[in-house]
Image 1: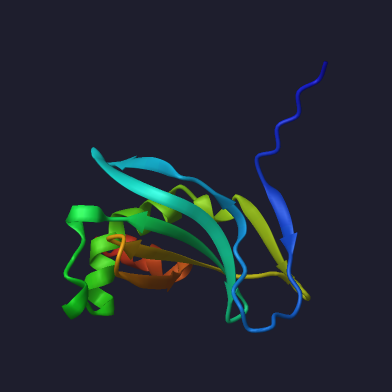
Image 2: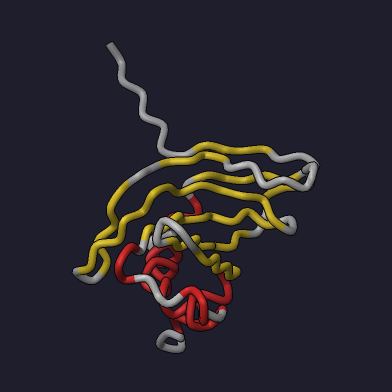
Length: 137
């Protein structure tokens, strides 16, 4: 008997009807980053603006920021440990996402929720690398 393990796959994407279909969805799981646990409901890819976005659905529960006054920069600071982990670990590379003319550039995103409300953050990988290099947001 031979066991075969597939650790990555390739997804080919064609024209979209404007919707965002989740691809290669996995989870739930718990990530431990710098001693803190994060409840990740799922990870998946979306194709948005001709980029492959590796997305994490994060259930922040009782540590969520106040969503009523949240802006993009504050939201990014709140999910920065997750974003940094995704980029430094190259989790976004687990699947090759091909467009019509070849590989798509990657971005990373986090959708954080308390179970009732939520906020989405998205950044190109190059932007996250620059933020990491500068010491964080």
